[in-house]
Image 1: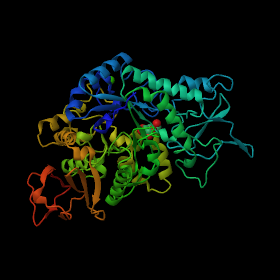
Image 2 (image 1 turned 90 degrees about the horizontal axis):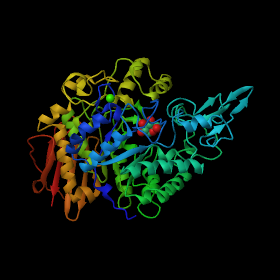
Image 3 (image 1 turned 60 degrees about the horizontal axis):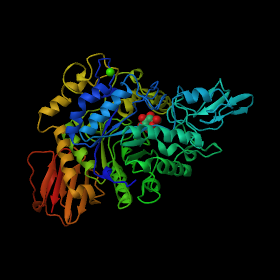
Length: 559
Ligand code: GLC
Ligand code: CA
């Protein structure tokens, strides 16, 4: 089938369904709620919706542990209701992408239930089962890998009398993708949704789906993701993806984006370089999300702008002319960006600056629910009040080197739950998210920070998102232009240029509340440029430059 590259011009809105909008009053977000907000989503100026998992799931990892790939969780609605949402989205010109989670299933999935019965049944090789090692009369796991979420990557199953591999939670056993029958199941799931009219797939930790066949131990042992080299970006993965493409994806005009933790731009190019070997349209990078932490959001460090700039520029430069970027600064796996790289004190200013900073780069912008109204981190009083499966283990590991009173701070600023509180729709009770009792805590700031207030104020962050997306859509220099970073050494300013057939865009972003002198780079006369986006009302140019105000943004267009 002839493929078009419509995905290059689009912008995507991500819904984490549990916290988006509750339509039936049980306190849990659902598809009735989504249906009522489609016009709102469309009004932002996006072209597509990506749904985090909507499938039946025991919710050990809130939907990323799937027990039925071809249905909708009863909390969210029914398949029929999903079809209606799909239809209504399409009527509004919004495409719909599903989350494809096939590195693992739930342990409550029928495949796993059958598989644990032992050898001889059709599902016995669907997962990684190993007998384990006996050392001095003690039973030990088959190797020393550690999971992302819960200590050892192996759990003993008394029913089968063997260990199974789980790179994430115990309730998320890894599928054995090396088994051709498992790959047939994946293709079947893909076809199920694509045949229904879904327009694309976001492929969860797809780069972990290949494992070194012997599953060897790895040294030195580290507390999280030990064994990485045996399960991250193994050569098998490209083969699996090529097979999915050949047998399924090539037969649909659909979009694919792969999530790729622990992956550099060079490695990403193996999958996304346009041409014969391309197996995914885009990759979800991680390095730009590590400018205030060490590898994981939980290990906090002071924000380092140069680290962030290097990460963005690295992907922009390496993919230039070869592949297409996925651009994001928030999703359900990271705390809120204003609380991290911006400033809650200058919420609106920094929110606008951050939005322009990433969306004016080359690639497809993704926006996470609530980002467009400037939601900030949820902060709970007690670690026990947090829900996310990864917190307990992270706190256990961190308590070895983080003082006790800092542990709560670590969770408040670093946990995924900080960005999973209910969407703030209005100043009404429970932020207008539900008429019932919300399943999780609502951020206390909802009286000031909510969509209704943003809607009324012409100068709001929400209206700035609209302006920015509308601008991007009609400007070839944003959609297609080359990217070049300027003033790389600055620790306060992120400055870059986009250029395309005689058009140039100069993007100036301040990442500090301090006043910083900005001198126009060589070849730029600001008085000749048109100030097209900004976050302060009055804007003067003095002696070829200006002194930045807190988190100031200025975007000049030269044509
Ligand atoms: C991805 C998802 C994350 C989930 C993990 C395991 O990283 O984005 O939310 O916990 O995969 O499925
Ligand atoms: Ca509900």
